Length: 129
Image (cartoon, rainbow, N blue to C red; front, side, top):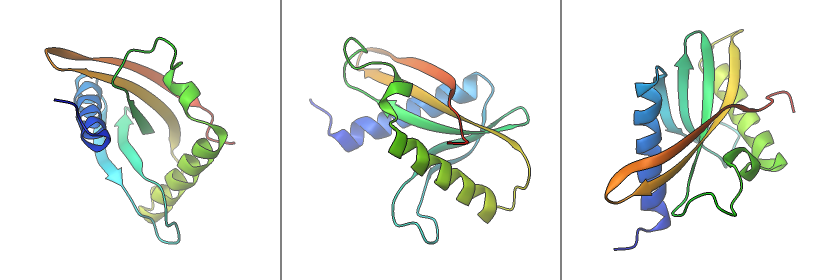
């Protein structure tokens, strides 16, 4: 049975969260939206890795990388700017203050009869754009 885009994305985010937890990230939020004054956008996963606040964009695909490029390449300038604005809003709303932050991208390919293929890119783009 073919998955819908929404169910594929949800499965990928669940696999990503489990993977991140297993490698030591402490997840503090998933699918966070909307923010006051921002009608669009979502932060897929927010987590701490030691003392770094990490905003993780999850990219789920139904096929391997082959000609789709790497996950960080699938985040264009406009999407990066949006994620940075959302992250700043999250930090402000939650009164987090000065903290080291970074943006990771995790690429997930769910497989029906085997564990998902997962590729994590730490510090995928600079948050100062």
